[in-house]
Image (cartoon, rainbow, N blue to C red; front, side, top):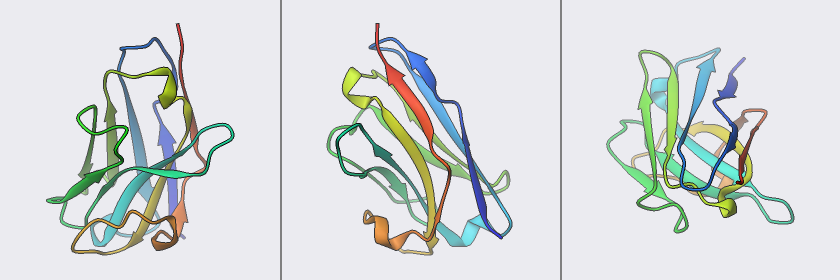
Length: 125
């Protein structure tokens, strides 16, 4: 059974950085598209970043472009989200997701069939 476990969240000051890790177990991650989503209080879940099966194509939500970087290391079965220049608006629960392999990047939640439990990221001074 596939399991995704996120780590690396916490409290950070505005302008700071955090890295989220998502470890994949129970299968082969290299044939999966991977993504990070987030849910902020009172808002719907939104795409943060996605990466295709090969790792060569990435896509980002408009609000995090040029600040966040998604990457994957399939030898370690881990997907990373490097978050820089964090803003209070980035405060949310972040979820790692895995879905069927893709050529491009899938940004819809419906594409992903496995989800982590979520991890809190709070940006505040």
